[in-house]
Amino acid sequence: MEAKDMLSLPEDEFRARVVERLAAHDNAISENTTVTKQVAEDTAFIRSILADVAAGARMLCRLAAAWRFLIRQVVLPIGLPVLCLYVLFLVAAHRPIPEWATAIFKLVG
Image (cartoon, rainbow, N blue to C red):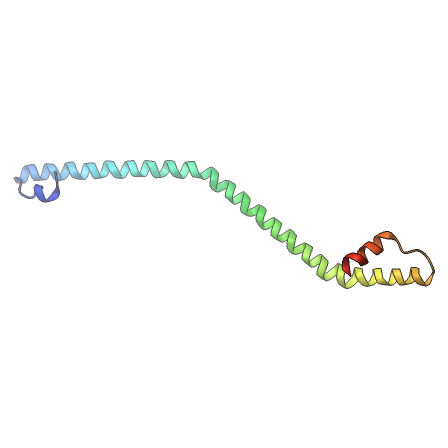
C-alpha cells in the first residue's frame, strides 16, 4: 500500500501499516548491509593483490631511478673519461684497442 493511501485509514490500521512499512525498510536495510559486507569480503583478495602490485610498481620505479642515477652520475662523468684515457694510453703504447672499447665508442658515437 502506498503512503498516500495509508493516510485515509483508521488510526489503528494506519499504525499497523506504518509498523509493517518500517519493518520492511529494516529488512531491506539489513539485506543491503549483508550484501555490502559480502562484496567487501569478496573484493578483499583483489584489494590485497592490488596493494602488492602497487608495491611492485614502486619497486620498479625506484629501480629505474637508480639506473638513471648510475648512468647520469657515475658512468657518463667517470666511466667514459676513464675509458677515453685508457684507449689513449693504448694508442700511445701502440697496443690494439679491445673490441669492447670499440663497441662502446660505436654505441656512444
